[in-house]
Amino acid sequence: MMTQAQLRMLIERSFSPRACECTVSGEHSLTVKLYHPVSGQVDLVVSGLNMTTLQSEDAVNALIEELRYELESNSLHRPDPVM
Image (tube, rainbow, N blue to C red; front, side):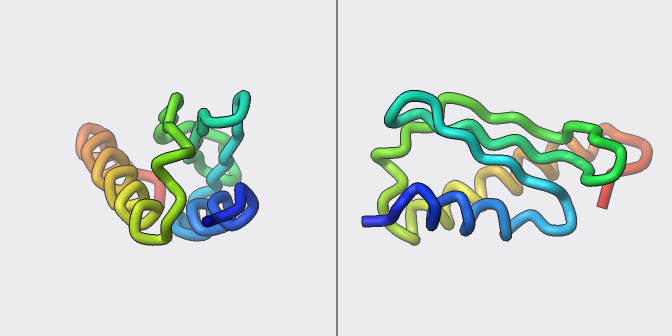
């Protein structure tokens, strides 16, 4: 089983140089916010992720890939993506 601290560390480190903030609401709901560290411009916010499904490294890596896909999809519509 993965602790909340391990989960947050894996997710937050995966999106450098963007800033990533993971917050837990209640016992089982995770929100991930990706934003530019200098300007604060928010690139992606995903709420309501069920933490009980994120207990293995494989599950967390699958989530990270999904978030990267969403981030890339959102960035396609921007004239100057933040990187």
